[in-house]
Image (cartoon, rainbow, N blue to C red):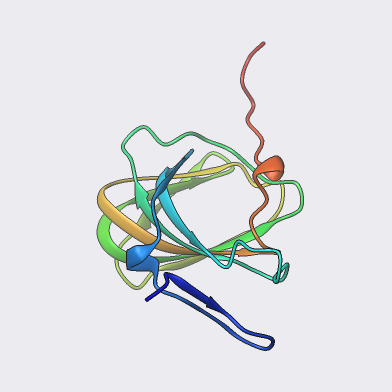
Length: 123
């Protein structure tokens, strides 16, 4: 069976079967990243210890913690994360999640666009 099924009015994704992609937070299995959708995507993200602070200019993200403990840095403030915690991150908010064994479900709205990932790296 395919990792994703695309029909005229619905899509189904099997996140366990989607290959992981490196991202600033760790690795992400990204669903609904196809040309038949521009509304939202869904990512299963395994957070790495040295995740990078970044932000988005157009995209809002909703994180939902599935496993692990840690914290999220939002515009320089640290907030605890544990299973069952949800976080909405609006455009322009610098953020990164940090934690041991942290697994989150991330819903970007609109659909994730790799061109909308920004860093404040010194030049």
